[in-house]
Each structure stands twice: as C-alpha cells, then as structure tokens.
Length: 290
Length: 290
Image 1 (cartoon, rainbow over the protein chains, first blue to last red):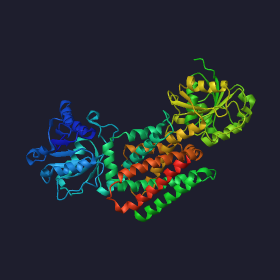
Image 2: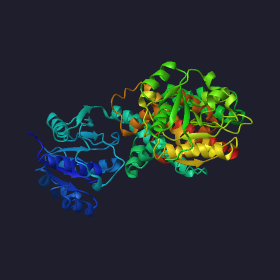
Image 3: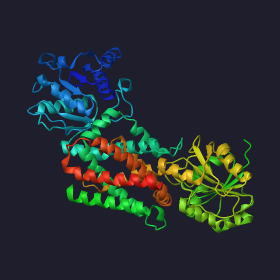
Image 4: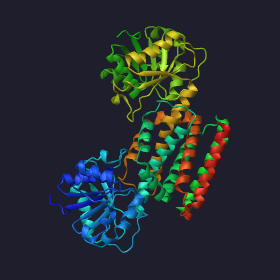
C-alpha cells in the first residue's frame, strides 16, 4: 500500500493508543511511542507494541525531534488531550500533522495553528490498558474528523488517509458542535444512565443477588468502562449531555403517563404527580431554551 | 432421565412457549400445544415444535382433557396470563399442575387453588415468535419460582423438577413482592430507560445518522423486545418500577452534581437548579414513603 504516512508517534499507550500502534506497525509504519507512565512505555517496547520510545513530553516538543514524524496521535483522556496539545507548541505549524482521539471536542481550543486536525475513532471497549491492545479494533469502524482550526488540505488529507488506508476505518467530517451533541445522545447519555442505574442498585437496600437479566448485564458492561475518561467526557460535554438528558426525560414522562393512566395506585399518586410536574417543567424549559 | 413429567401442554407459542416445547420434546416429553392464533398452532405441528395441538382454550378447560396432563405451562404476556388462569377453572385443584412464565407476578391473584405454582424463566431475547424458538434457550439459566397460593408439595416439586431436570435450569424461590421489586430494578427499569432513550433520539431534531456507539446499540437491542409483553410488564409492575426509577434519579442527581460542580455554565444553570430540586423532592419522598 502506498501510504503517505511512514513515521508516527503515539502519545498515550492505553487501549486506544496501543491498538493504533499495533495496527500501524502491521502496515509497516514505524511507530514511536510515549506514555507518561514510563513503565508502560518500557512494556510497549518489550512487547513490540511500538518500535521506538521517547522518554519525556519535553523531548517531543522540539522541531528537531518532530521533523522526521509525519503524524503525532494524542491518545489520552479528553482533558489531558488539550494539555498535551498545548505542550507541543514547538511542533505547531510545522509539516508534522497532529491529531487526537478524544470523545469530546468543544474544549480543544488553540489559536493560530494550521497542522492540527481532530479525530474521534468510534471504537469503544469496556477494557482498558495496553494489555487489551488489539490491532483489529478499528477495522470497518467509523472515525469522525473535525477541522475547527482550518488545517490546510495536506494536513487534513494525511490524517484522513491514515485512518482510511492504514487503519481501514470509514471517515466522516462534522463540526465540533455537531459532533459533541450527537455523541452526547448516542454514547455519553447511555453511559451516564448506565452509571446511575448501577449506582442505584449498589446503594439500594434490596439485595438483587444474581438476578440480573440480559438488560442489566449490558448496563454493567457499559458502567465498567475507563472511569477517568468518562469523568472527563461527562464534565466537558455537560451542556450537550444535559440537553440529551432533558430529551430523554420527556420521553420517559410520556411513557410514565401511558403506564400510570390507570387510577389504581393512590399510594404513589402524589409521587407520580410530582414526576409529571417536573417533567412538564423540563419540557417547557427545553422548548423555550434549546 | 427419570422425569415425573411425561405429558405437558404449552399455552402460547411465542419464543418462550415454543422454546420450552422444543426443549421438553428433546427430553422425550410428549408436548401438547395451543396458541390463540390457530395458524401458529398449525405451524407448530408442521414444524415439529409440538406433538399434538388443541384448538380452543374452552376444550382445555375440562377435567377430562386435562387428566392425562402432568403440567400446563402458560407462556403468554403477563396480563393474558391471569385471564388464561381464570379460564382454566375446571383444572383448578386437580392433579394437573399449572404454571406460567410471566415476568410480573403481583397481579396474579386467584383464591382457593392448590395446584398453581408461578415460574419466571430468566431467558430474555430481543427476538420473538415461534421461528426464533431455541431448545437451548434455557440451559443453565435461572428460573425464579413463587408459591403465593401455597400449592402442595407434590405440585411444587413437579414444577421445580420440570425446570431443573428437563430444561436444565437453576431454580430459586422468592416471594411475589421480592420478585417484582428485584426484577423492576434489574430488568424492567433498564428496558424502560432503553425505550425512553431510543424514543428521545427518534423525536430529536438532531439527526444522529449511523453514529451509534456500542452503548446505544445495546439500548436499541433492548428496546426492540416484544412490545406487548413490555407494555404489560411496565403497567402491572408500575409501583416497583417507579420505586426503582426514583432510586436511579437519586444516583443520576449525584452524578449531575459532580459533573456540574464547575460554575462555567450559566446558560443552563436554571435548568440544573430545576433538576436538583426535582431530585431532592424525589429523594425526600422516597425516604419518607418507601
């Protein structure tokens, strides 16, 4: 395959970064790797996840070091993504392209850069860490690209081609606001709800034992995902997440009205009334504000 | 295997009833079958899901017909379960044991019967109908038994032995109130939430396209389950369902407080305040009433 990416650096060797590294290596790309935990970087070298290691972020922030790299991929949790980007200022506006893998994008704000293109490879897993790395994790999955800094065509094409040709992904282009709202609805809210449901079962005085139906097992799986990443996602995308939640509460209200149409439940009637009022308030709020 | 069940009748040939029929037949049990849709009963005979058919519920409600049956299993949606039980009054208090498969139990009230034992085989599927029948659907799954009518030992043992020895399930005994609350938390609420989330995405003006992460796909699968059965479950178990929902709202409130601790979101602040107040109300209601 004629790839226009021959040398990459992956920053952050969790499941996403190390899976990208493995997949790129399998296509003959030379992969440098760095993790802020040096024992993970060493483990990555020993287990052939990367070809070469870098020992500090400071040494990456150098035109001299970066000049042989075609692409730097930042694969750390969402909040750290912006920190790392800010710490690579020497590489801004060079021929080396920089991209990321964050599930939230609205907080990534940098001025006057032309070589940063944002990526979101949609390949969730309830596993985490380098030992869960899988070179086939991304095959045929979707990767949403955002170009909020108007990176020039060469940088954009390089990122797009890396995901498509090297990692065999489909790509789509979205604005940051479109991306964050859509994934609030389709990914962040389902995970928030899963955490809440599992937490309520944990806190309950009712012992549910091993009586989990298939439904709950999926919620358990979702709520077992990387907590640092999800804390960042929920916090950074809270505005869209609450919009999505307000939408869900309206649908939930409609369902509760259907379910409780009967008048046979006087002992919880005041509670139902309360739920209805709340949800009507949310509904009218949503209609006027969003 | 020495089974003390040789002849059974399965009423309702959806995925649950026809899977029970197939599994029992594979153990050499003679299986009669009936579905209120006669074309399904005919299809069951032709495709060897059952050995013999019955054409009307009236003909089942007869001591003469039932005397050769060891066990009648009612595998219809929860509301119909009570109707069918009521329509089999000629078989009450005979040597033929009657059981069901309903996911909700609190509505099943019959007086002065000694041969009815309730069963809930925990084997969900997002498929439905006779063509999805699977003789291995129940193997190693759990079956919760309830004995609200104090059926005598012989009837109870017969039902327990059928699930354990013929269908290779594990069994557990619970009270009806324990059963309905536990499954409200572990099964009914997850399904309600899945319906609400999918409905809110359907109603949204935001086009989510094919951007469903793994999380949403599980919700889609859950919300694709048999709608008549789920309408019955939600309606009949609404009291416990709302208790479970109130618990989840408290956990959701706690998460929202953590997520929105920052003061950077003035434009949705009133909405957040509103959510907090609602959930505080639910919390104090729950603490005083439940």
